[in-house]
Length: 342
Length: 115
Image (cartoon, rainbow over all chains, first blue to last red; front, top):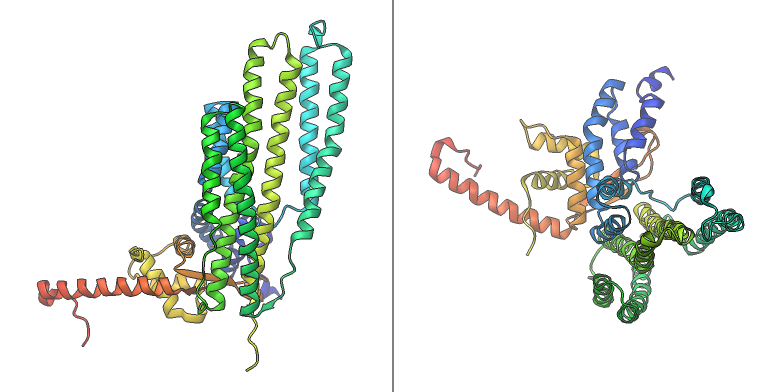
């Protein structure tokens, strides 16, 4: 028993190493480090030499340039250059450390509660700062009470939204058996491609319609262009790709996984793109109100809160969808080929 | 037209080819160190190269059953895909031409391939 303990890394050290390894590479890399374990010192040194490469590789693999650029542009517009420079590495690392499964329900609900509590705290803080100026238009006690009640309502509303997403995710997650025949895998891949074709065509049409509407609503030209480009990409992407029939199980699975990863990246970008016009409109209003803030501070504050909530919703949607795709990729990773008896 | 492989990619692909069914992180790293003697190769660099080649579709990977000697974790196995084999063959042809040219010009100083 003692000999067995000596051939294992200490729990505390292993836990630190596990946290440092990005989840997508954790299983293989942590197992390899364990297998070559000699002493705590060697284990720590090997982990220190290995993990930075693994992190850099996961940053590269999860780098979704269009989505990152869109997010960076939104941060730049709202918070300025310094915040963008500070948050960009955080966004890249967030991509590398994304979970290989959907966020667990407890964590998701906790995030929603934290989010609404943050908004409440913000309201209270601003209330404390602005209270001496209650004589100004739109800043009476009744308005503050209304805002406070709105903040109180926010928590259950966000939790409900998160719970809805979790339930929908539970319904959509397929049960993947341990073994699959090649024909079953091929069928599953074809079904996925068909569903993608329908979704791409629908979303491309919606993006085109939104871009046309954007012209009438005087959206930013860049945003209209982005919508049209995304629609065009989806139309092109909708053309089903043929896959060679002679491909074996492993190659087919790898191709399926690559397509799933590509979709995850694409949908993340599209989700943020859909939210962009509203965020941009809020920003334009905020800028206009900045000039008039002496007259309308409440509206400006509500716009800030709305922008934060919208970002929360976009992040929740992308993490649920991305997590679901990652779950599928993970299930495919472990599935073995079922050979039919001759 | 296949992408040309970098030297380290060639070494890693060759290691996977040589290891056949037993190609996973630890064994690939050991084989890479053996192939690139006297140079040392960082295990992290091997992982990064494996990820990059997988994204290019040159190799594919999957997880095995968890094993006790790995603390209940699975091995990530790798296998060369057709495009990987093709790229490796092209690299081998280039290397062959290099060897022949060096042998012709440097004579006894160069290593001569057997046969």
